[in-house]
Length: 90
Picture (cartoon, rainbow, N blue to C red):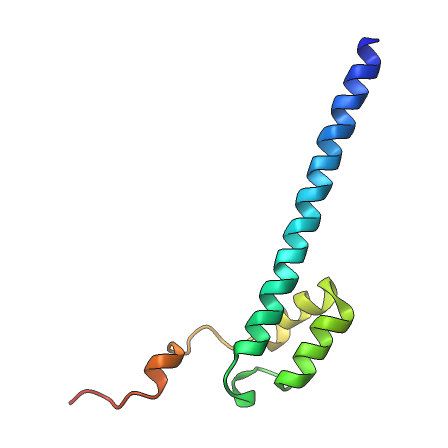
């Protein structure tokens, strides 16, 4: 009986871990999709356009999200969107 309970506990832990991984991947997918949609100009992407990246992320799922983060996401050295359009201080 104790072996059966130990196996049940292991299965429960494994199931919980699998659920956490799936939720993390789903959150990553949603985050990359929203990030790709919110880029204001097509020229900000390192490669491709908004339409291409949204289609890649939607049609290929987690793989497309990873490719977007590695290849297409705009560089992080850009100023925030609101400050790009402000005139410089004198």
